[in-house]
Length: 121
Image (cartoon, rainbow, N blue to C red):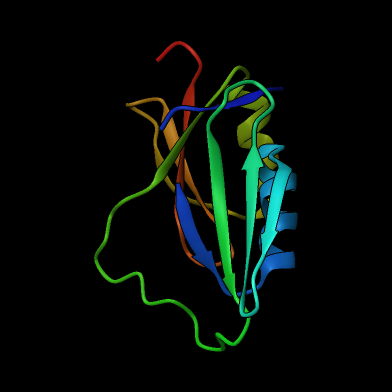
């Protein structure tokens, strides 16, 4: 199964938890990292495209981020929707399904939504 970005920065409360989620759920790998005195930036890639997702971890941040009514999301294409859906169902991270449209959304540890769409779209 291969995921490729369709649609870059999000802030995360727990970097290790987020890295584990993106690896397990979407096969994203760390491409590079930048350390600052009070922040860490980790760039994730899919190994297929040049697009990367930047995770920003502010070291002193203790409170979860308020995502409000912002309906922005990431979108990734997958070549095997059935296998992807089964993986995400077993992880318990599916937060919304739109069967008529043939897509669904998963939610990461910070509550960001990620749209999963078939490769042909």
